[in-house]
View 1: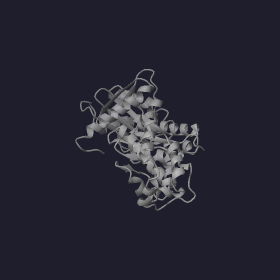
View 2: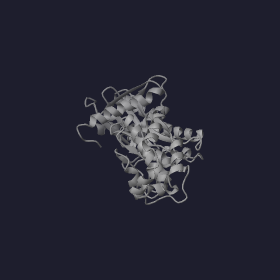
View 3: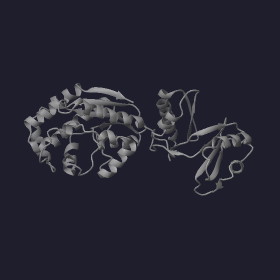
Length: 376
């Protein structure tokens, strides 16, 4: 869908990403031509894991498994007949669609389609040709070196290649929302880092591992992710000891944003990403979000802001994070939760509360003691 003169930048980035993501699986030749990426496994390199990995790479619209043919009409028909034997074992409607990139090939695209279609119908007489919405769409491509036969396409992850839109820092909790937020922004080309706030012993080591497992799942879509695990116990304890209970949550969120911004700057990120949805909880009212954002100088992306919980859950199930997110391990946001949190905090009142804290020292200490773990 990219039509500008910079399209090649996106395509080159995508080819590089495919090579990197397939490298741990084995040896593959990866090339591109006319917006199609060709992946050819070397002897012994597994095909199914490569297909599964390719379907998770942002920027890929669809994935097809194809057979390589000798570049002659007879070679194409013979391979098509053999390759599609299982596909055509039952009565089906079908259509052959051909594309001739090598204009030296003796048959035109319509002629290739007619010849291969006739051959398949003779070989499998129980098939029924159907030009509109067939059960099986057979594709034949004649390229410079080879011809290819495929049948059916599997949807890819879509979006645009990771890293083409810059880099951002995801505030990753152990809940349902934040992994979905990270996925949605990575799909728009952002490379992700992640920051997690860990309040041991109020939150367990299992809770920390749960977050790392979520990051590992996200890495399957957007590549390596470095998770910055921030020690947050001292800050929460200080808030509890010095601030009014109804301000606990909003002040905690402001401290998180201050820390996340510093961590983001150290990792060359230009924005923060959160999983907030407007009105979902007390800290996600319009007034609360405005007060929270007041401590940030960089943009804060909230891709879930207009979604309801059912919509968010649907995406989390689709990308495979839901079952991990609902594991019963608490995150720091559930520590010292006030009975009656402020839902319409006034900036001047929040600043007054924060006067009782040494904000700069607490933030700097947390940042300096952050643990970094790279996944993917």
